[in-house]
Length: 321
Image (cartoon, rainbow, N blue to C red; front, side, top):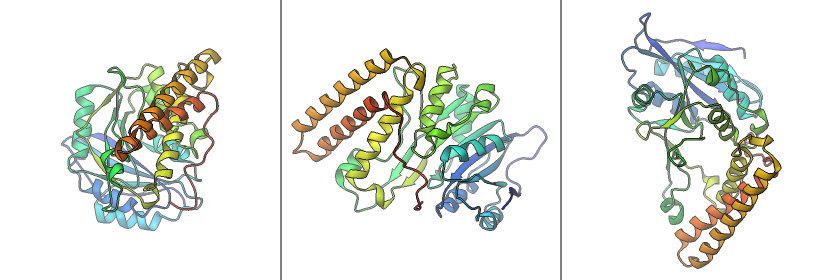
């Protein structure tokens, strides 16, 4: 199906109104329509209008008719963009290229926005003046979730700074100021589109270009934890993959960093991994602490590997959503 726009009025429509684009990359998730409903329930601040861009990363675009119904039900202006295939970076870039607003907010297709999310994100952006604003994504755990997983809040994504500086973050809940030319012209690297880590790389590159980034804890979204993510094996593999992407991007020149810098990262991360493994051994009879240190150790092991080789494990675009 070709690109389509399903238009219904939301927000003020004066000539002076500020347009905010909201980008959703989707791949075979029915939860997308809950995401759209949560956006439709947002209060749009005076002086603003919103558009929603749905970038469909499936091999064949099939969602057009359902998106049309969702637009009518929610009152949203939704622009449907097929963005094949099975590469999340392609879908994210499709949102960047289609966005017509002064800012683009990314939210995932399995998340729902809390009441006040849009207002708080815009308020934080205006107050901060930063060109990138990260917000938290809080996990919703099923009743049968292991206690250690809940206590460590394994699946929430809370943005962090490093000595007061925000260097990178995730694209599950983030605002990009498209008035900043460096942000507007940046693109996600398709080499990370199947492995994950495309957002870590993207924001590290913006940071190295001097783009100011900030955090708000007020603009919140929620994500139910899928059953396949409930196993300790899945968690450990994901921690390693996350560390590998981080290790490949964190150095001063990213993947083109000098050998000496990468070797230093390998040694530091290897030492941290060994320390975490030791701490895990000392707490093995307290499962929550044991799992915490094992996860930290796996992350640092991934960083060490990422300093040497790029991520290769495909975490995105399988036959299951």
